[in-house]
Length: 95
Image (cartoon, rainbow, N blue to C red; front, side):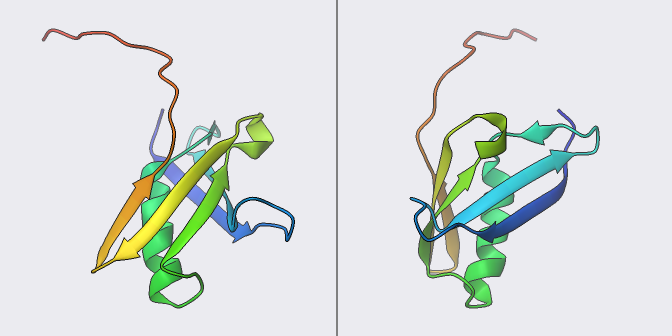
């Protein structure tokens, strides 16, 4: 997939199990269900500006029928992104 061109974030609803909802769109118009690099960049901005606590949860992929949940921690000038994964493809590449 082409690189992410547009990222959108908004506060999640009060009854949600996440603090924020994130969406990421490529130049080709595709939506990425979960994007760690986008969430890391957003975390630097949100926590650095005081708009989010140093640890929070972001939800991504909801509109695509995915239940992506990203756990964000900003500590000692480092941003840590985590979450559960499902391996869909596994293989070996020889060059």
